[in-house]
Length: 350
Image (cartoon, rainbow, N blue to C red; front, side, top):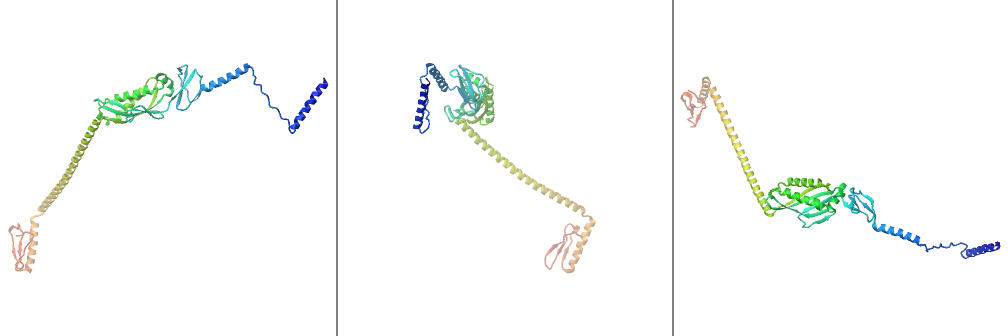
C-alpha cells in the first residue's frame, strides 16, 4: 500500500516537471469548468427573477415630476386628494397611475385673426373673438387676453370635478358670458369712449366667478381688453360725428379768437379815450389855475411891460403905427410902415 502511494506521487511529480518543461518552466492554470446542467429548481428561480425585471422595465413604476407641475395619483381609478409635489415618485404598476398636470401660467387669446381654436405655443391658446350684441342688437367683436394658472393645491379636486380639459369648462364659458353681459349694456358708439370702465367690469366679473367657483380651480392673473371691432356703419357714423365735432371746435376757436381780438381793440380804444380825458382834464385844470391867477394887479403889470416894449420899438421905428384895443380884450397891433409886416404883441392893454 505504501509502495502504491509512493508510485502515485512520483508519477504525479514527473508529470508536473514534464509539463513545466514544455511551458518554459511556468505552470499554466487550466480554465475552470462550468456545469450548465442545473437542476429544474434553480432554472425556475432565474426565470422568475428575469421576468420580474422585465415587467418592472416595461411598466416603469416611477414618475419624475418637475417644477411647474403637479402629480395626481390614481389608485384603481380613484384620485388621491393630495397632489404630488415635484420630485421622484413610485407607484404600483397596473394598480396605480400618476397623471401630470401643468400648473404654470396659461394664456387664452380671443382674437378675430383665427376662426378655430389653435395653439400658438407652450401654454398659449388662440380662440375666436367673442361676438357680442350691443344694447341695440348690433354685432360687436371683442378681443381679450386671459392669463391664469391652475390652483396647485387643489389640482386633484379640479381634475376630479372637471377633467383634464377643465379650462374649456371653466375659463372659456365664463369669459364669454361675462363679456356678453358687460358689453350688452352699452351702445356700440359708446364702447370706445367707455373702454376703461368696460375693461374693469370684464376683469372683475371673470375673477369673481373663476376664483370663487367650486374648489377654486384656477387663480386669475389678469384680463386685458385688447380691441373692440365695431360694425362698418357704426364706424362711419362715429367718423362723421368726429368730423362734425372737430368743425364745431374749430368754429368755437375762431369765435374765441375774434372775441379776444375785439376785446384787445376795445381795451386799446378805452385806453386812448382815457388818455384824452386825462389830458383834457389836466388842460382844464391848468386853464382854471391860470384864470384864477390873473388878478387885476397882474394884468396891470403885464400891460406896463408890453407898453415898455412898444416904447422901445418906437425908438427904432418912428413911423410905426400902434393900434390900442380898448379894454385889453385883443392884443395891441404894431404896424411897421417900412416893412409892411403886422406884428402882434401877445399882451393886453388899454
